[in-house]
Length: 463
Ligand code: TRP
Image 1 (tube, rainbow, N blue to C red):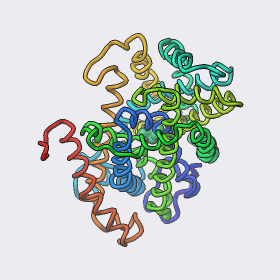
Image 2: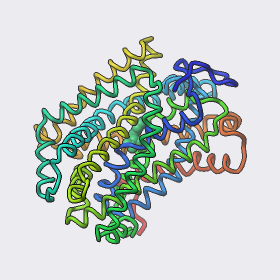
Image 3: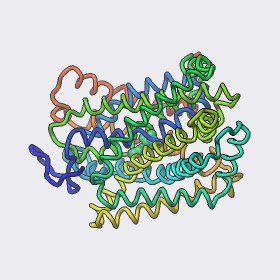
Image 4: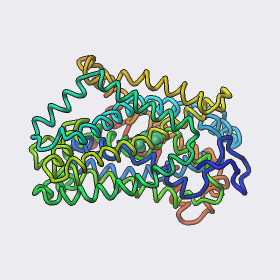
């Protein structure tokens, strides 16, 4: 998918080649955005934060913060055409500021490594659930059995470690090969297939008898239940699900041909990603209520609701297997994006081959992943700050590093880069350009800072 011909009118060329088409870019970014964040994380985080009001804040964050940050990342990436660290250093100097902006890229590289260390463990669960579904473990099982299956599996660190290792192996393998055809084909098939399967599951969930309950849980806002911590979680979720705030989209943008519309591409990705998250919620919450489960159950939510519901349906083993296969694919294409900033950085900075970089970075991530592997068993009782190692990694990356990265990226694109540079990348200073600039300069930074300060209790309540 990365052709070695440089973009035609490009001033700078990427060392890693360029996407073969606009479609290839949109697919790659969609592949990175659509993943565990939509199907595994969104429902349980929404559930833990009371549903409706959280969902509304999340949607607002996607539109008002996510979309402009995504556009900023792509335009910075395309202008710099290097890895996020080098791109920020280069543009920082070029725009008359400082090389020190490279630290924003550096924080992104680190965030990607930290996120993938737990992401890969959860992706490993989905691999295990392919086998469990296919062998009929869930056929006709009741809620207690499915719950016990989940607890038994995550409680066995060897099994979890094995699946985590397998998933990291698959990820390193594709990254080593240089993201050629394989990924593009996978995404081209995976995203539409996931969408269709979600619609099929939606059909099932509509007839479960509890659809109305699920719907009102998701869309009836009760703002009295919403703490500033929940608002921070909603904002973090918007960053996580869109893959923004850590330079991944910047790295992908570096390979983007000059003539592609950044606004159009961002709009397509944001729409697809949001649609899949909402669908996942609409599938899962009715099943939660139909089976008397607790929406605030946490990371096990999808792994308990779907196998249970499907186990009671004719052909359920087949659909359950298919579901976890698609989810694994979605996680896989996201994992590639999570590694890209670090890999591109190691390739450029230390003159390594892609294969060497993939093995070095992948190996580190694999090792770090044991912190999460053990969080559900051996070290489940070790608790500090937000809880287990997993919960701390999750909080630190999602709720702090990604929004902070997004803040700096928006400030850089909105205030440091001159109007001419950004207008050139975004295709002229028209109406939508002005809206983007307004959001990037004011709404994004003020919004993020406000939520941060509120969540740590540094701003007083007016009411
Ligand atoms: N968006 C991915 C998901 O929803 C997770 C993710 C966060 C990601 N940051 C990323 C993926 C960077 C690729 C690149 O599952």
